[in-house]
Length: 129
Ligand SMILES: [Zn+2]
Image (cartoon, rainbow, N blue to C red; front, side, top):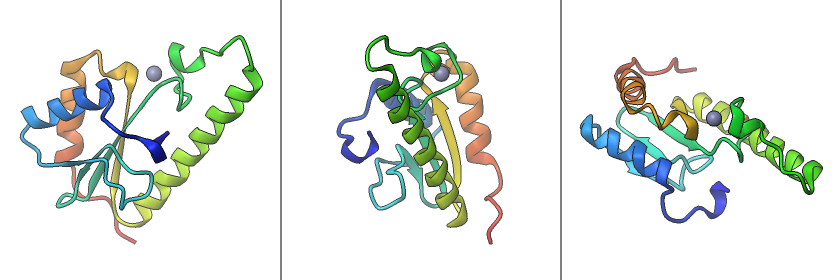
């Protein structure tokens, strides 16, 4: 869970490496922002979350995969994560941040991911309220 996150996971490191090759400045695990985003580019007001498909209930095979034991418990826990993710994104956007979510399963296609990161970082600032 985000609240007790320590060292970067492999998917987070992969995204951070790509960001470095694209030469965008960023910080990691900014605890002062809602949801403790994995990557933050403050000057551009952009945050990136790298989500595990299972824990954050992605609509891919890994995300739909349900444990055999305590299925109801895990399902409820993952649905709470997903609801919290949505609240966090809304909170950040209200504060003027652009938010990008990268799923673990999207890390494999580095070329596509690199393109997405580039477009996100280059896009105009999100609408301010
Ligand atoms: Zn996925």
